[in-house]
Image (cartoon, rainbow, N blue to C red; front, side, top):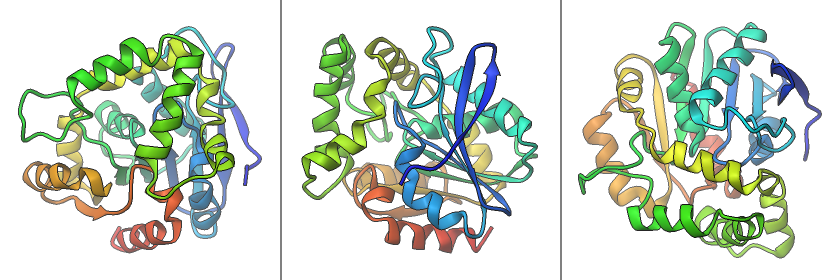
Length: 272
């Protein structure tokens, strides 16, 4: 279900779309690469009963302005800072999915922890590239290079990439054509040249320092998909021993298994 949203002019001629629903402690959802607030439809409805839920379409995604500048995660972080300041939100709980986790860690990197009550990230490593085979990374370098070189050089190639990305990586069960169309509807609104720029920006990000600060200082948890658990869990336990770990489904487990996901997240939020 699509929510009625709002727009905030994050800079001249650049509007950021966001959902603002409910009352209470702010629970801020940041979607992954090219995805939108609609990905969190089951969390928005559920958590707005007890929290003030904020969910955004980042710059150049979905219903936000498509712009030729600022298409990198440093700017996405700055955009989130400006929005939360505009809304005068205090003691927020940040929830980042996939590359959205680079934004939540980046918020901490930029402003520290004075305004962050807890942090939840979903299936994202803070270190996307590494020569250390024991590190949890964003993918094999050949795969990343191939995606950047061949799968994002036109809008058609990007759409052709997003379909198997959704059906094979995002979820476990077989999706209908209607479900695939629904999931990628807003993702493919981002032009290929912007998606490509952000893909590179994400893959060259390293948020280890911010992740360690979070792990040492505030309640935090990480949801890891089952295919990534064999490398992700040991990496998290070694480097971030205080972070709670949940293993569930595939990359978009919060959409495919909303009741299980929300129940696990509820358990964590009770400790905050």
